[in-house]
Image (spheres, one colour):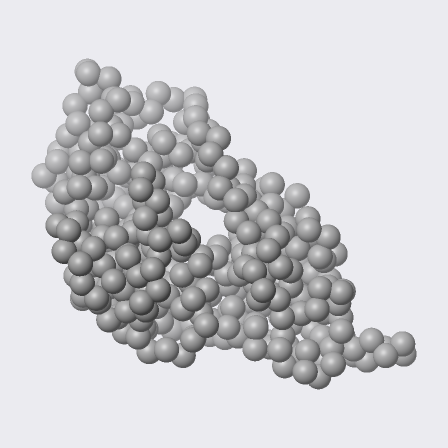
Length: 351
């Protein structure tokens, strides 16, 4: 089951933790650092909390969320001490900290959990669906939408001074209360050519301000190609759509392609995602919503048994739900490709 495999293997919060931790090294804000210290306070008294905040954050998030709570048969408190030898809270040697944290994560023995350095993290910004260099996520306690990771260096969010923990109260004047990051992405996607987006921010110090942000996207190629592949003897017109990756352009491009095919009278579809290595998880859920209305796309379960459900959007279906859909995959279709195919197949929307 593609969704099952994805939940068990691909969505490892430690992977996300590592990516976030090294997106901007040593830029963790005091409030976040305090939370990290709270999390690592469970380390045995014989251990010394002497590692840099970045290392502590990676260790803490893995301990809290990793699916394998045996941590590959090791004591995670002892691992903290073992792999942080030679480091202290004032260590600023990025290469040294990176190596220690990478060794810590590697000790999990999980090929899906890894550390991304700043350059690698910057390269994956072609999957940024908002285009301002900020990652939005709900606060674990208040459920408010916050800036969940240090903004990409020199991005609009970085230049505007956004910090981890800043609360996003509204986007383009629409309040975020009660909404998810997916809802916000959907809102912004309604005007994909907009050059700016305005966040209403409540900073850590309590100050509220409107922040206009210029949208810029890392170089990304249109991943969608399509054509009417055949008209059968019974009159069925088949549309062929190829998606090579789930980058920042995929949802807008695919929606335009599907609308064009629908206008040409296409009433059956082949969706080709062979060799597609994935990309933005959100895109997979959003694209599923172009084929089916308000359905469970997938759910993500962490090491604590917390089950987070992701549903497709409401009233955004482009392809008539009675039009047959076949998905074409192979052994190199991974990650977001598995999410999309699993969602469509498990809801009996595709074969």
